[in-house]
Image (cartoon, rainbow, N blue to C red; front, side):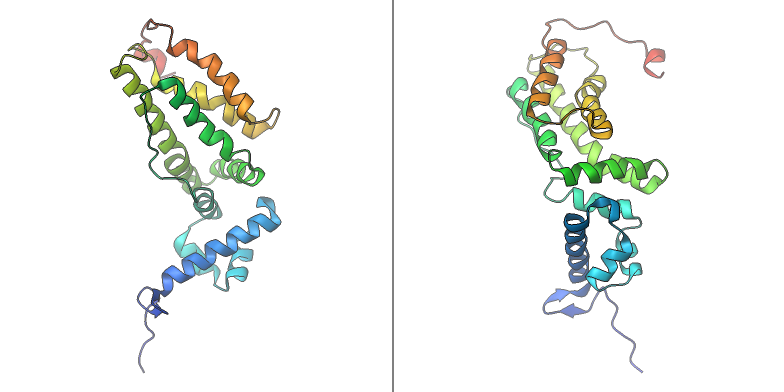
Length: 213
């Protein structure tokens, strides 16, 4: 008896079956999210809608959180490019990219769910840091470093803390929903952070022991 051809090699109308299955799962998951919302979203529903087994989904995404991250990252670049010729204008674009994304209720719901799942699922927590948080922080860090090199801001600023000051209020509003995440919020936030960047003098260095606290 001839054994079946493995899923990873069998072509279907010119496309490998694993890729066709992959796209079918994503399309089913996207449709379910739009129709049912994140709170009723489950791997069982996705498998049924895509016409695949749950095992087929778990081979690609080890947790529900991993699949949600895949959907959240659709349309977003893995590496974020910045043009740092004007730090003020680029910083505004950098922040507004995230603000505009989170004006969509579905994306806000997904991101809140991912933060919650990450508290008990280390796979989701690591993917959230690696795919959502790290690329934005890397882009912001590059932006600030280039601004120092071109004399736009003084050396000696704590870049990691500056990035926390920019994104901390955004995450706070995302999680507690006490105030909107909109363009006015971004403008007001930037007005508070810019004096720290463009003061013309560097703050005193923070001792290493204090940084670790």
